[in-house]
Picture 1 (cartoon, rainbow, N blue to C red):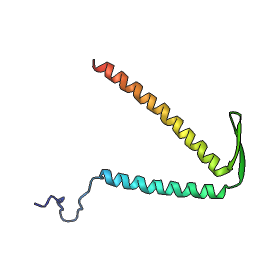
Picture 2: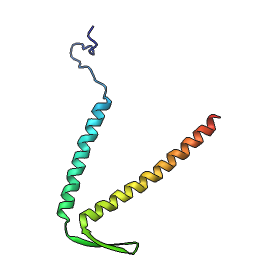
Picture 3: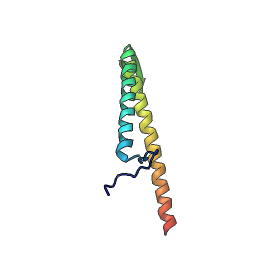
Picture 4: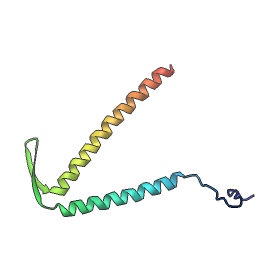
Length: 96
């Protein structure tokens, strides 16, 4: 017995997805997203004046929008982390 899935005539063994295969798919998807972001930034290199809390600066438009998207993602992650901590606290209280 070699540990390989058994095959019968006319059928193929189905392999279960592994964590590594899921990670590989995530890496490939991330590469595609990064390429799209790079194209977006390179196509939007015109300078834009940004005003924030009394400060002003000039950035390429694509970079400014990327910073805004990152700030939004961080905000969403913080709210999500706060909710997860709240649910964990409630779960611990429920166990007592």
